[in-house]
Length: 248
Image (cartoon, rainbow, N blue to C red; front, side, top):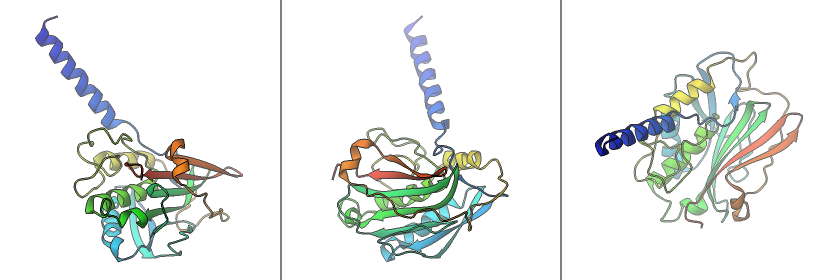
């Protein structure tokens, strides 16, 4: 085979690999909100202060572009420091949670595969510093943590990789501009919510699930970013942690 043909084969193989990577599933297991029709509307509790208001509004605007879900911002239902969940909806909170090593985290409470309540937490201990007090970092972390609460995982988890193009907030990378979902995120949501359920966990839920979550600190970092706590009776608390990329 000539050198030119070898080069063309290599280019073609790289293109196939790139397309395969871009089209890979990035659902968060099989977790999803139960609902009886599409599109469905989720309430998002606003427990953030003025430093985060614009970023929450932007995340809501971005994610409601999905064909299968809509979001409505409502008054917060929890103390931001505690950030306890509310059945049937998402609560978004910011506070100085300490030198935990994480910029943000998302938690979902699930009964079987059905999400019954969810939270997103933004850690001002880091976001108040010059490194993370930027439009890019605040946009990326807000967009990603809210996205996890629908059942989305990451498209890429390697900070050393070049950012996915077109960019997505569901990618680990150092941001340099305003971060949004991309079309693959919307396509993945359409896949996750392609079926209907016989009941709903949106805005109402079965018996209350525990709201207490274990602390996540630097000591937890070595165990990865995904944590599952079995609550009994087929119920789970699942946490995605967005660790600081520079090991603070």
